[in-house]
Length: 358
Image (cartoon, rainbow, N blue to C red):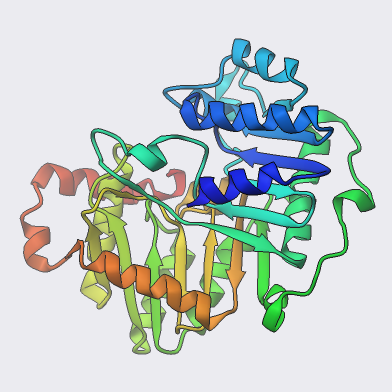
């Protein structure tokens, strides 16, 4: 659904299209996207795209220099964020993990999805890919635009800006625009913004908290907030994927989840493929959708963006999705945990010790 909606709105762009992603996988979806963007350039639309150099390098189908040369030859401005050079270790942290699109300063997108065809076709080892992305309009788009342009100008040395990029926005029905808060994490400037927003949201919960996150290795502050919520009687439900696209971290996630299970949290192991969504619903009142994983890399090191949406209708739509996914999940119980191999439990224990680095 994201790609259909995104491509349709790109087709109607009149002034500019801005894209910022962790990676563009060199596949059919990316090729279709860049072909469409090239057509918009011919119509006089400005197109700027940025991707993370490490995210590209870690991708099994990266954009190589010959691809970038071809893309630029079509008039698309595209840059790597923080190119990897020797010593490589200097580039291991502070990666750009955001996923942002802004079209004409009026339509925006953010969430968990990069540009890759496995969102449609799945992957052989883990099956169907599940993720969550949101289409935004109104004042929230101005914040996404500001985030993108700050990063773009810093990385390129350009000075893109002005009223054309921040047009007046129409007020949305029921003042929805005023009910969306964009929380951005920029290292050294707003280093704990998303972590604090998550912890505060968990602490504010009165009845229920539902979390879906693919790499659930939360920092101490998030774990403490969850444990405090359980102590005061708040129902906490956490969904993590039963399979993953990476090694090691899932074992740490299982280990931490089983500790929270012992404290009273309900832990669901999603069996319907790989759940890559980064969402939380609180009290059927508000929710968050964004790019941040609940791990140290997202909450302490990388560039991230989350939308906090104070709207019961949208929150309950996500709750309904959660409840459907529960039907395709296994409840983590002491019996399920006992069946886990001793080796995987050990790896999870080691991973728990390494939480600050995951």
